[in-house]
Length: 499
Image (cartoon, rainbow, N blue to C red; front, side, top):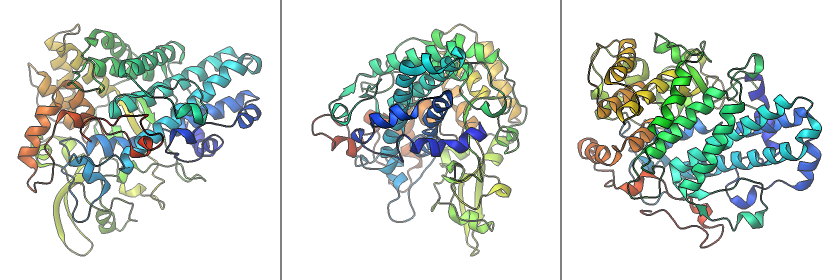
């Protein structure tokens, strides 16, 4: 996949160019489509282009999930930074670039997926001698379309449901669909993917979506749908689908994956595609055009890199870790020292006591170009699958309290902590909090578990010492529809309540 990643940016330009913002900018010309897809390799490049929309996914999770949550107290030192409105629940963030990016990048991926799927359907039988390759490419593309739609539903709730290519005029007339209808497409795509994707790949194809990746995302979809609705049009539907998720998770657990005994090795630059990785976003370094990652420095201040004699990256200011999270670690928890930099001295000799995440940073691997970090971003790993299983059991799926405790204690043992018993759902969410701190999963977990409203209100009261965060209400569980989309056609969309 590393070799394939080097083609992603180039292949994406064959279809869309870079980061269009409006629905009416997406459609591909008929002439381009007709002349491009003529041999099997063209379809492979087309699918690679669909993967290319994953590139900003890690940054998005850090900017919209981690920053939104009680893990960070990200108020700026001066001026107004883009993340401050995210962290502080500002009502006026419809034009925030992070919100805009979440919409545009995901829909770019969806439009590219629709184009590839239509071409596979129309031309595949004539072009492919190998039906297995056609089937696999179709399954990969459906997996990615579902992945992008699931990301959209979790951020925005109702979104336009587009499962085929459209003209600019058609796009400007497509309203938002009910969340349940969007889920119907997501589940259909993932069910197809899990039935038709291989269990593994070899060589340059390592890193593509597998059967297990599809099962993991589908399980998380069922779990997210099972979360409370909160009285908003968000990702939770209040369904009881925990027993639908459980067998999918068990299949992954019983698959080719194995638990790594060292927490640090999970994120080692020399241990990518390790035995815990179910699905990741892959990056390569030194390519032209650049196809590396930027997420390692998103939460890291430039002044720290400078103090280490390294190139500044782009994290202009600290997004400090909340005192609530810092104080929640038990003594001896190895994850805290590995993931968190607790204060530092600037190159000017000024001591800054604030803490920030350095989980993805290897100072020996800092690239010359800040857009060219070579480390992969793990979307789903075995530890997460195990904890999702425990969550299902605590919500009534088949299993016992002993099963839950055993899962938690295996993870605690790796962290250097003693065993505990009778783990509750609230306690499980705190286990998840420390395990995945700095990985962009916290907000989604709080929403899914039904804890987000009470937790955020209590956290603001406790940690907002500068009185910068607006009072939290349930409308802030999802984000506003980007202003650029409201401007496409007056009245096509109604803004989400609260913004």
